[in-house]
Image (cartoon, rainbow over all chains, first blue to last red; front, side, top):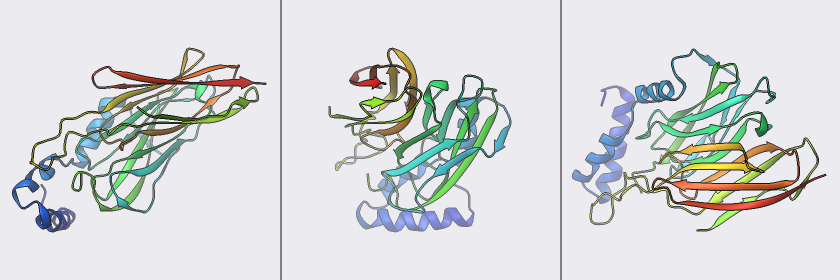
Length: 157
Length: 105
């Protein structure tokens, strides 16, 4: 774990939470399981390859604050006419902090009619969730949104 | 296994319709511990598919980051009357399905 300010804050908050009930020993696993932002970059490359990531065209809707990280409503959409010639092939939801960066990959196509998908995700703490869309011409577009999570998934089960 | 589908019964040709699908499933992450401190084994749905008269119109790969009782809202263009088929498959290959009849006028 890197020794920057954000991680120190996380550390003290987590210790406070886990210290209440579970004690120091059991807090070791949630630490080890937490992901790093580099994992998110690697996950995007795993799914979509090495193409250039362009900012824009993709919108992520999340609540500004979530009281419970176990279920947070999210909507991802991409600006596309969704025709045979020009459509979204895939969209992925990526977390820089969850134990597994890849949350979901949606497969769309011209039959989808509209590139907008909603679901509910788990969030292991406050973070900026990214969504990546792969267009029919192969171009990659990324958008993001942040949510402050007061009770993280995994910690409270 | 409870499945809930929300979809229109009728649509006009070419209209983009919203489909909502939810299945009751704990989506156990494999990171949680039980009261004895033992890790609870991962048990997740990994795949969802929606077919429109047999043709795949939307699919999703799920990971443990998807909340319990996976919910999806997505869209399709109404082209012809027929059957929408919703199928979920878990990590062990077990699957659950539900269908919905759509009339296109």
